[in-house]
Amino acid sequence: MDFDELNYFFFDLDKTIWNWDKTVIGAEDTIDSLREAGKEVYFHTDNTRLSRREYAKKLTDFGIPAEKEDILTSGYVAANYLARRNISKTYVIGEQGLIDELNEKDIDVSQDCETVLVGFDRQFNYEKLSRAFKILNEGGELIICSTESSFRTTKQVKPHQGTYNRALDFITQPTLTGKPSSVFRKEFKKYFSYFPEKSVFIGDRFADIETGNRLGMATAAVMSGDVDRDDLKEAEDFREPDYGLSSLTRLKRHI
Image 1 (cartoon, rainbow, N blue to C red):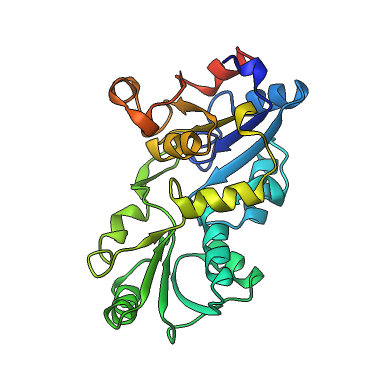
Image 2 (image 1 turned 60 degrees about the vertical axis):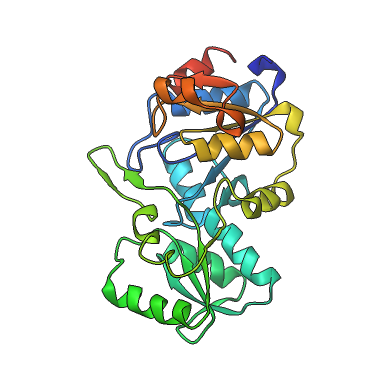
């Protein structure tokens, strides 16, 4: 399938569109070219540091105009997952972006609860770990928004939440609301209007590729993040992308 035949483009954010404080080479031009060609462009991320509204502003500030509804985050998926089960409070290891998504669903942050929700948290510490440990040790449910291990800026690579999931998931089996989970995919289908056979899911991790493949889309791995050429040569089944792109500039050439 040629990119010309595709009408819906779903981009990951971290390490695909940007390295947090700066876009990757070709990002703005590629999105502009797609939109000028009449393509629909949307975004997805497992990073819960910001809310959908804040991500839309960040994209717009980078010269990639976006609305809140153009973006699906694993934090929003988690909030919906809780709301659909009539859970009105949860203990949160995470930052304001995740809490904002919970607030939209009238879900309170509390230590007096039976669930622990874990997102990206740059202030993760022993006290938070102890509070979560108590809830889980008493039979509480563990919900994690991502398994991603690294968070990249233009200057350095830092730990993502996958590194401290390990401090909790030995207590109980977690429910994942991020990619490539069935929870994320079900919410994705409700959130966006698209035709799978006319869509492509783009990202830098095998979690992105598996998500897109399981959604019945074409998939493209951008080698600006966690996967490289050697990884892609060994990829099998749902982890094997239809396209391998050295950069987003390569995608633009096919538009």
